[in-house]
Image 1 (cartoon, helix red, strand yellow):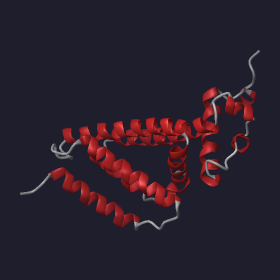
Image 2 (cartoon, helix red, strand yellow):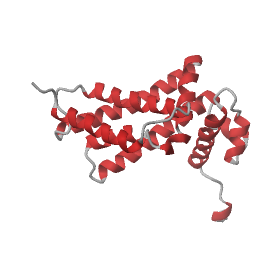
Image 3 (cartoon, one colour):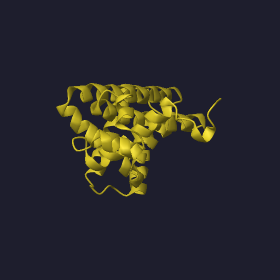
Length: 204
């Protein structure tokens, strides 16, 4: 006899997502070195065994948390494209979104991951892979922007992607350090002017 829905056990996907969401909060609050797997499991309402049943260690969980966050951001941008947003507008959205105060929960995780990657080779490999996938997606966006004419053809799409990624990561690090950011509206207007220049290419 099947279990009632109210008593059904969560799927492995749901368990992983609960652990990752708990890890994002724990790493952001405690830092990578001080965060304990038992506290992450407790925050997720699961046992420590659930962590080791899904992740080899804390380093893998940190990298997965970063990858999960980047993938979630990618899905959001994909929805914007599907709703008719121009590729260049989506690239701008990535930069302007990172100046929004709502990034407070994500920014510390990125900062911790970058710091941990300098000390832990396994974390470095996984974080590098996650960032590589993010930059590849940004490069593809830049290529789409060139196809529709909103990004000049003489700009290297890979360099445009690196610019967007660098600004985004830089904003995350500054936010995690509680450095006061620029006015969101002024920042957004400035980014729009920057991309307007990239659409027309060099003058003279």
